[in-house]
Length: 371
Image (cartoon, rainbow, N blue to C red; front, side, top):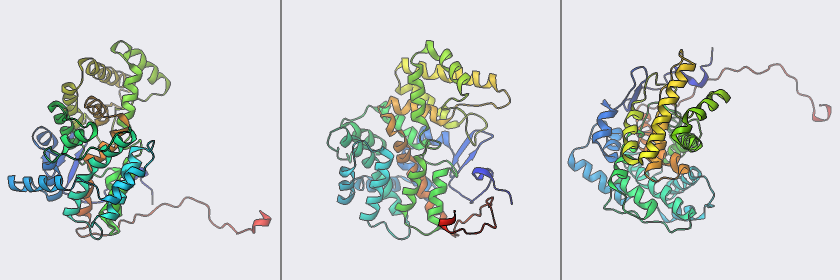
């Protein structure tokens, strides 16, 4: 038996929720191409689609929106946990902790349900925005029931009604990142679900996986790179030096896609609309030169822009601090996690893969005083 490193190429589950067609550069949610949804659907519509397998009718969408708006507030125990966190905590640690507290305080134990998925998805922005306000020495902003999911998130961060172009850019980001096949955090959530644990535990596991820099932390590193470059005139020397030194740039290449990530193409336009002309010139110029130089140096291993590159530029342009990028990713992905948890429980079987033992055998125990 040979182990597949990173489970690469191993199919662990059948799913109806989403699929990445890596060779073709396509992402499909429940049969819909992502570019169809990103330009036309709200995050609430896409969440309904992921959970239910079809787009909502008008009355179903209105009911979902109303329920999500009602459930944005944190229970007292979760708010107390939020206020007790140290101001220098990692925002992903804050999100993990408060979601866990909410899971203990709310009636969302037992078998995961669609109703519980709505509740957890509704409160994620409240947790992230509330922590950011408190660590900045400001009071938490209460949710605004007159705003949609994306607009309310921006409002709770700043206390001001966000401009329409910022709302549109963030809404598109949330739609694009809501699910993405059997990625590390989704797999984690499904493994936990297969043990018949509760939904909060599954989602908290997803948060833990997403926190890692190889999964959810890359966009912040893209911003560090753009800061280092600083100006259009410095793109070539900076990238040349980086590639000569360690041969790697953040925001390029993907484990699954063998062509352009369709989400990156859509976010590029969102970044253009939301950014200053100077910042977009820096980002787009960096993209163009980096792709050309990476592929010149390694023509046999062509790389393309991935979603992290323009996720960073979009989130930066709508005013999010870069250390909130991973938790904002979670604000989007919680819909996908919960959809996969619900799907896992249909005909569930405990996920229990084997390992290939490569350690020693036949060792004899030696008492501690003789070692």
